[in-house]
Length: 244
Ligand SMILES: O=P(O)(O)O[C@H]1O[C@H](CO)[C@@H](O)[C@H]1O
Ligand SMILES: O=c1cc[nH]c(=O)[nH]1
Image 1 (cartoon, rainbow, N blue to C red):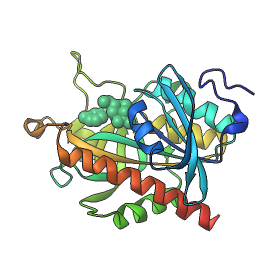
Image 2 (image 1 turned 90 degrees about the horizontal axis):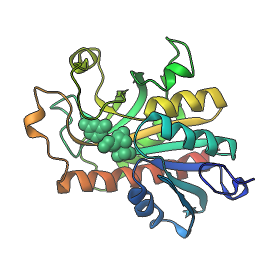
Image 3 (image 1 turned 90 degrees about the vertical axis):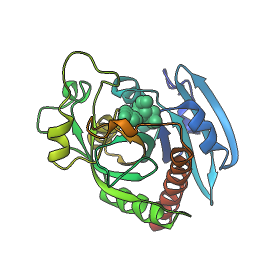
């Protein structure tokens, strides 16, 4: 069946998927696969399939923000994906995790609007623990591992501020490590549909206003961190497939 938004035949989609916001990052990940094939590029959704160390997987971009990303996650799970790993970027809340660090998201604080329209308040956006452990272990094994953290991330809808002040300080005080824009949708949808999910983000600067002077997303440290998180996600998929 042709998936209406991704425009891919669901028969071509394997059980594992790496998802990321940027279609160019999807292409960069696909370059690391054997026999990579681009199946479609519809809207912001660019879909590749291929193999990594004998495991078949899809690599799909989901764009920016929960509503668009949710469409991608839903269609992939309907097509038969059972394990999804998001490979993203995020802003850091802590000087312990400077730009170039990696964070594996164990859960997302839901400040987005999309999940509020899917599930009641109090419903957790939580990762699958096997997926988290596999990503974290693979991240520590990557060459030049750098700083790798594990913990709560925040998902919000806003990238450029309006007149409302976003509660970064409170969320940081509550233990959140970083902020991005799609993980809550991934975790809630995976829970609702019986799939398992995890996420790793490369930090590209500080979201905390007290640290923001150091913000520079265009550094080699960030580019290298993205390479390492790609390696971690691919390594995690191999670990998960071999333990299945
Ligand atoms: O790098 P990606 O995967 O797009 O993730 C982050 O970057 C985008 C904002 O620039 C948002 O999508 C955010 O979640
Ligand atoms: O959503 C995002 C992504 C990267 N960096 C940020 O500060 N926010």
